[in-house]
Amino acid sequence: MGALVATLFNGPAAKSSSSATGISKPEAAAKVSATCPLTDLPAPQGGVPQRPALAIKVGNDPGARPQSGLSAADIVYEVQAEGGITRLIAVYQCNAPALVGPIRSLRWVDWHVVGQFGNPILVFAGGIIPDVNQVFQQGWLFHVDALSFSGSPFVRTANRVPPENLYGSPAGIWGLDHSSKPPAPVFSFSKAEPSGGETVSSINLPYSGASNITWSWSAAKGEWLRYYSGVPALGNGGEQLSATNVVVEYVNAPPGPYNESGPNSPGVRSQTIGSGSAWVLRNGKLYQATWNRPSLASPTSFVTASGTKLSMSPGRTWVEIVPNWVHGTIQ
Image (tube, rainbow, N blue to C red; front, side, top):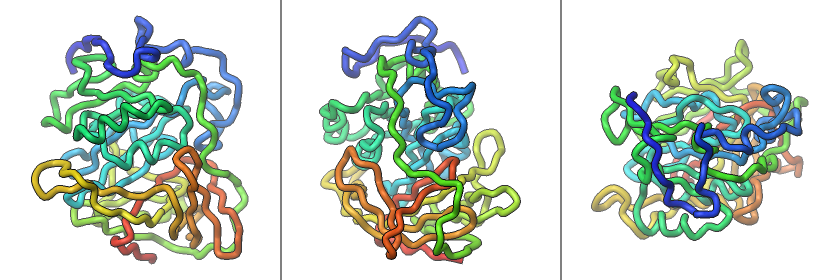
């Protein structure tokens, strides 16, 4: 992959230094909790690392697959982009894979999604000027534009064609930020299954021909398995991508005022603040619900028609942010 050359970060000066090893003091600090805040799973090495949530924008067009690091994410959000493709926001806190990517450009929806993680780090690779300018104005957010670096903690791989060859080291990225505060949980968790679920084998979310997503329940593995147009979705290690919980939020998604990738390519402004219909999938069952998020800093809650607040099963969660014009189906 070549040598990594350290460069200065152009983000907020008060948070922009790192140690010579690329590992921050907060990461090495004492650990105080036994349960990961974003998964409710036992924390690695007996305690939650004292570091913020790290959200990395990852490509998901066919040229970006298979991606690296997704199987280690605590939460992954899938969001609609222009031209029918989707992109991913992979969120890490307890685990740190060696590399994550390919890292792609910022979209309007990204910082709206991550507002619920307190003071997170958001990593992206450039973006249109209006969106980048807005991110720079978010005082609660530590933003990292990977294109501001010519080396560590980022690397260009030789086996991918640009722009699908930019990857980042979570350990090195955490080293850029002096924050040591883990996020609060954004979901409630319970091992007990809620009542009222419908047993299902799979759901299909046809974002587009390039991103036709199916999640199928595997009783043997106790997980939902991900497919693209019927073909297993794989990570860079050959593993099939999976999740303990899958959440589908149907949202209003008007076009943005700016073109993203050339003429006639307006962005998609998925509205994740407000309320709408939702599906919550866990333990082989689907729960019809309403999602509600009153403000940027608030977590999203899920409530059934009977008023029951839905919990997730302890584990990793994928959240599908689905425009209302996409009609999912249930098997």
